[in-house]
Image (cartoon, rainbow, N blue to C red; front, side):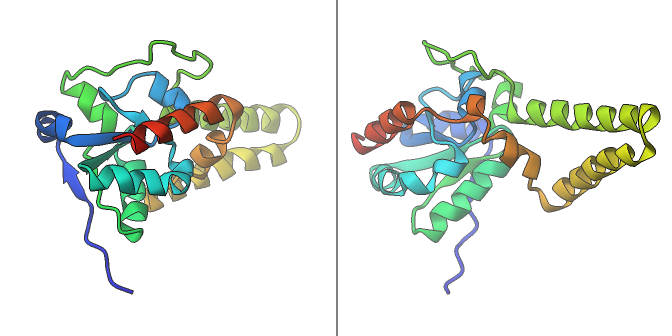
Length: 195
């Protein structure tokens, strides 16, 4: 197997100057995308990238692909998958968080679905904190064995940091408020085909 080159990464100012050259693909959940995305970005959640490979190949053949997420981790994973399929793609260093921190505008869809407006990172922090608190409370009030919940979450967070993956985010991404509606993804794929 031939090794694939490391994905090209653009800093926010570089990406902003060249934004018109790219098809921007946001791989966050629809809820995160609705909370604010780069101008002109199309939403294809990371777990739907394989379904969009033909359209992404078409878009890459007609200009560059810039893949973004909240921090850059998911977009790096998406770029790796795309490169394995022979589709060149670049990522935005620091993701939409760095984009907004530099004072650049994030756009929201006109008919914004307000079901999920929390970023995935915020959803993970809330869930992890709630389960740790529940484990501690049940451990003190019901039985000490419930503290295993808290220990499990702590271990999961350490593993997540070491491996730069997040099983909890993957599970939360499957919840209804984080799932793309088929019509939205179909419309995005049609938009990519028309480029």
